[in-house]
Length: 290
Image (cartoon, rainbow, N blue to C red):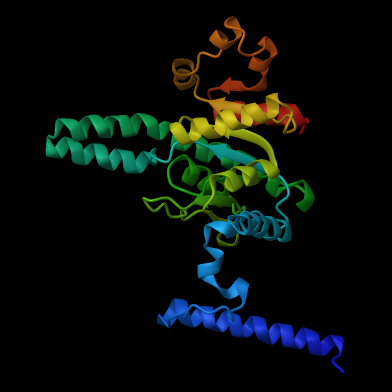
């Protein structure tokens, strides 16, 4: 008669065999023959079928959740912003090269890079402020910087936490033009997603605040999703801070929505616009009375 230990041992052996098969396939190019007898969870062809999309949703939700919990990451400050803005030193190099080349288009692009590099520096400084505060807190009270894990403003925020030796989270996304995780994300807190919806869910699940630097379609998508969730009370109220009044004042005219009756006047209080990293951090500290 099989004992409980026998069953566990048999199950473990089965999983190990399945893993060995997958490794051989991935590393050595050993073909996986189509076979009904193959274990379902060790069958990439099966898991990638349209009919198993729901299973993939669940796995993509569960894996980061378990790993973040195990790492003690329970509260985050999410930083959004453009992937295209570079660090000030890189922007300066671009400008020097453009001036040497005499290319008018390259010079204009480099001058824009220098202007936008200010936001990179601000995102880095903001994250440094959060990380410096959290470093002094008990483990359960720490706030971890969380970004999309890519370049630009995301890199800057992860870099700011890295500057003071604090871990930070990166929730990257698989894109047709491959986006690699930036070098400043803590390796065991670097996750890759296929589904934007699941990635957005993970941004919000632990977020105690959201700080949004200038960006494009992706940044706006993330900002308006958060505003909608808080407005409709699908998410708890959290500080939503927009950095860079000159940028946001040109981009957003939400007073018009009030004038047209599309939103309520109090909805304009869901977010706050600031100009410095210190002001952004003060807004969060005031909200939570830190």
